[in-house]
Length: 197
Image 1 (cartoon, helix red, strand yellow):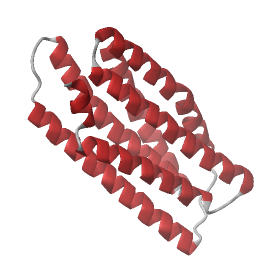
Image 2 (cartoon, rainbow, N blue to C red; image 1 turned 180 degrees about the horizontal axis):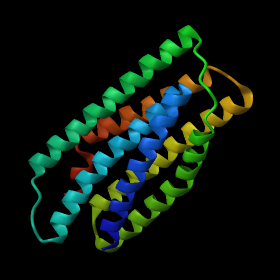
Image 3 (cartoon, rainbow, N blue to C red; image 1 turned 135 degrees about the horizontal axis):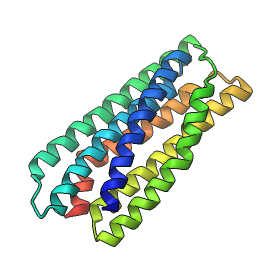
Image 4 (cartoon, rainbow, N blue to C red; image 1 turned 180 degrees about the vertical axis):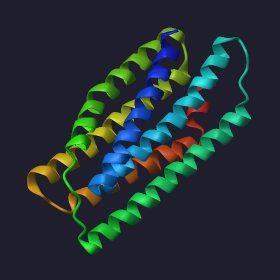
Protein backbone atom coordinates (compact mmCIF):
# COMPACT_ATOMS: atom_id res chain seq x y z
CA UNK A 1 0.00 0.00 0.00
CA UNK A 2 1.50 3.29 -1.13
CA UNK A 3 0.19 5.32 1.81
CA UNK A 4 1.87 2.97 4.30
CA UNK A 5 5.15 3.12 2.37
CA UNK A 6 5.04 6.93 2.37
CA UNK A 7 4.49 7.00 6.14
CA UNK A 8 7.37 4.54 6.63
CA UNK A 9 9.59 6.67 4.37
CA UNK A 10 8.66 9.76 6.38
CA UNK A 11 9.64 8.04 9.61
CA UNK A 12 12.93 6.71 8.22
CA UNK A 13 13.95 10.01 6.64
CA UNK A 14 13.06 12.06 9.72
CA UNK A 15 15.04 9.76 12.04
CA UNK A 16 18.16 10.24 9.89
CA UNK A 17 17.46 13.96 9.47
CA UNK A 18 16.97 14.46 13.20
CA UNK A 19 20.17 12.65 14.18
CA UNK A 20 22.29 14.53 11.64
CA UNK A 21 20.72 17.94 12.31
CA UNK A 22 20.94 17.68 16.10
CA UNK A 23 24.58 16.53 15.98
CA UNK A 24 25.53 19.21 13.44
CA UNK A 25 23.64 21.86 15.42
CA UNK A 26 25.37 20.98 18.70
CA UNK A 27 28.74 20.92 16.91
CA UNK A 28 28.17 24.32 15.31
CA UNK A 29 26.40 25.89 18.29
CA UNK A 30 23.38 26.60 16.06
CA UNK A 31 20.10 26.81 17.97
CA UNK A 32 18.14 26.81 14.70
CA UNK A 33 19.75 23.57 13.54
CA UNK A 34 19.30 21.87 16.93
CA UNK A 35 15.64 22.92 16.92
CA UNK A 36 15.24 21.61 13.39
CA UNK A 37 16.68 18.26 14.50
CA UNK A 38 14.36 18.00 17.49
CA UNK A 39 11.40 18.87 15.29
CA UNK A 40 12.33 15.91 13.06
CA UNK A 41 12.00 13.54 16.03
CA UNK A 42 8.61 15.01 16.90
CA UNK A 43 7.54 14.46 13.29
CA UNK A 44 8.60 10.81 13.64
CA UNK A 45 6.28 10.45 16.62
CA UNK A 46 3.39 12.10 14.76
CA UNK A 47 3.93 9.94 11.66
CA UNK A 48 4.01 6.82 13.87
CA UNK A 49 0.57 7.74 15.26
CA UNK A 50 -0.75 8.17 11.71
CA UNK A 51 0.85 4.90 10.55
CA UNK A 52 -0.63 2.96 13.46
CA UNK A 53 -4.09 4.35 12.79
CA UNK A 54 -3.77 3.76 9.03
CA UNK A 55 -2.65 0.14 9.37
CA UNK A 56 -5.51 -0.53 11.81
CA UNK A 57 -7.99 0.92 9.31
CA UNK A 58 -6.52 -1.08 6.41
CA UNK A 59 -6.71 -4.29 8.44
CA UNK A 60 -10.42 -3.63 8.97
CA UNK A 61 -9.99 -3.02 12.66
CA UNK A 62 -10.68 0.00 14.77
CA UNK A 63 -7.92 1.97 16.38
CA UNK A 64 -8.46 3.37 19.86
CA UNK A 65 -9.36 7.08 19.49
CA UNK A 66 -8.61 7.65 23.18
CA UNK A 67 -5.06 6.33 22.79
CA UNK A 68 -4.61 8.34 19.59
CA UNK A 69 -5.79 11.50 21.35
CA UNK A 70 -3.43 10.93 24.29
CA UNK A 71 -0.52 10.29 21.92
CA UNK A 72 -1.26 13.47 19.99
CA UNK A 73 -1.49 15.47 23.23
CA UNK A 74 1.93 14.13 24.26
CA UNK A 75 3.27 15.16 20.84
CA UNK A 76 1.70 18.61 21.35
CA UNK A 77 3.51 19.00 24.69
CA UNK A 78 6.83 18.10 23.03
CA UNK A 79 6.19 20.78 20.38
CA UNK A 80 5.52 23.35 23.12
CA UNK A 81 8.67 22.26 24.98
CA UNK A 82 10.68 22.62 21.76
CA UNK A 83 9.29 26.14 21.18
CA UNK A 84 10.14 27.18 24.75
CA UNK A 85 13.67 25.78 24.48
CA UNK A 86 14.37 27.45 21.14
CA UNK A 87 13.02 30.84 22.29
CA UNK A 88 14.96 30.80 25.57
CA UNK A 89 18.19 29.75 23.86
CA UNK A 90 17.65 32.28 21.07
CA UNK A 91 17.12 35.14 23.52
CA UNK A 92 20.20 34.05 25.47
CA UNK A 93 22.26 33.95 22.26
CA UNK A 94 21.07 37.44 21.28
CA UNK A 95 21.82 38.88 24.74
CA UNK A 96 25.26 37.25 25.00
CA UNK A 97 25.96 37.82 21.28
CA UNK A 98 26.88 34.17 20.91
CA UNK A 99 28.39 33.30 17.54
CA UNK A 100 27.65 29.87 16.01
CA UNK A 101 29.99 28.20 13.54
CA UNK A 102 29.02 27.84 9.91
CA UNK A 103 27.50 24.40 9.27
CA UNK A 104 28.04 23.01 5.75
CA UNK A 105 26.42 19.75 6.93
CA UNK A 106 23.36 21.66 8.13
CA UNK A 107 23.12 23.58 4.87
CA UNK A 108 23.38 20.37 2.82
CA UNK A 109 20.85 18.55 5.02
CA UNK A 110 18.22 21.29 5.00
CA UNK A 111 18.78 21.76 1.26
CA UNK A 112 18.15 18.03 0.75
CA UNK A 113 15.02 18.26 2.91
CA UNK A 114 13.79 21.08 0.67
CA UNK A 115 13.75 18.50 -2.13
CA UNK A 116 12.56 15.43 -0.19
CA UNK A 117 9.72 16.89 1.92
CA UNK A 118 7.65 18.34 -0.96
CA UNK A 119 7.97 15.01 -2.82
CA UNK A 120 6.80 13.08 0.24
CA UNK A 121 3.94 15.53 0.80
CA UNK A 122 2.80 15.24 -2.82
CA UNK A 123 3.03 11.44 -2.75
CA UNK A 124 1.07 11.24 0.51
CA UNK A 125 -1.62 13.58 -0.78
CA UNK A 126 -2.11 11.52 -3.96
CA UNK A 127 -2.07 8.22 -2.05
CA UNK A 128 -4.51 9.57 0.52
CA UNK A 129 -6.87 10.84 -2.18
CA UNK A 130 -6.71 7.51 -4.03
CA UNK A 131 -7.43 5.65 -0.79
CA UNK A 132 -10.10 8.09 0.29
CA UNK A 133 -8.23 8.66 3.56
CA UNK A 134 -8.55 12.15 5.01
CA UNK A 135 -6.03 11.06 7.64
CA UNK A 136 -3.26 10.58 5.06
CA UNK A 137 -4.24 13.80 3.26
CA UNK A 138 -4.03 15.68 6.58
CA UNK A 139 -0.61 14.17 7.26
CA UNK A 140 0.51 15.33 3.81
CA UNK A 141 -0.27 18.88 4.93
CA UNK A 142 1.94 18.33 7.98
CA UNK A 143 4.78 17.14 5.74
CA UNK A 144 4.32 20.22 3.53
CA UNK A 145 4.71 22.34 6.66
CA UNK A 146 8.02 20.52 7.30
CA UNK A 147 9.16 21.68 3.86
CA UNK A 148 8.53 25.30 4.93
CA UNK A 149 10.48 24.65 8.12
CA UNK A 150 13.36 23.28 6.03
CA UNK A 151 13.24 26.44 3.91
CA UNK A 152 13.36 28.69 6.98
CA UNK A 153 16.31 26.83 8.52
CA UNK A 154 18.17 26.57 5.20
CA UNK A 155 17.76 30.31 4.57
CA UNK A 156 19.05 31.20 8.02
CA UNK A 157 22.08 28.92 7.72
CA UNK A 158 22.98 30.20 4.24
CA UNK A 159 22.58 33.88 5.20
CA UNK A 160 24.79 33.35 8.24
CA UNK A 161 27.42 31.56 6.15
CA UNK A 162 27.44 34.32 3.51
CA UNK A 163 26.89 37.48 5.55
CA UNK A 164 28.01 36.46 9.04
CA UNK A 165 24.96 38.03 10.69
CA UNK A 166 25.09 36.59 14.21
CA UNK A 167 21.44 37.46 14.91
CA UNK A 168 20.11 35.35 12.01
CA UNK A 169 20.52 32.00 13.83
CA UNK A 170 18.30 33.00 16.81
CA UNK A 171 15.78 34.59 14.41
CA UNK A 172 15.63 31.36 12.38
CA UNK A 173 15.16 29.60 15.73
CA UNK A 174 12.21 31.88 16.51
CA UNK A 175 10.66 30.89 13.16
CA UNK A 176 11.06 27.23 14.18
CA UNK A 177 9.38 28.06 17.51
CA UNK A 178 6.46 29.56 15.59
CA UNK A 179 6.10 26.39 13.50
CA UNK A 180 6.34 24.27 16.66
CA UNK A 181 3.57 26.22 18.42
CA UNK A 182 1.31 25.93 15.37
CA UNK A 183 1.93 22.19 15.04
CA UNK A 184 1.55 21.73 18.79
CA UNK A 185 -1.80 23.49 18.81
CA UNK A 186 -3.01 21.32 15.92
CA UNK A 187 -1.85 18.14 17.68
CA UNK A 188 -3.45 19.23 20.98
CA UNK A 189 -6.76 19.90 19.24
CA UNK A 190 -6.51 16.49 17.55
CA UNK A 191 -6.63 17.84 14.00
CA UNK A 192 -5.45 14.57 12.47
CA UNK A 193 -8.12 12.67 14.37
CA UNK A 194 -10.82 15.09 13.24
CA UNK A 195 -9.56 15.01 9.67
CA UNK A 196 -9.89 11.24 9.56
CA UNK A 197 -13.32 11.08 11.13
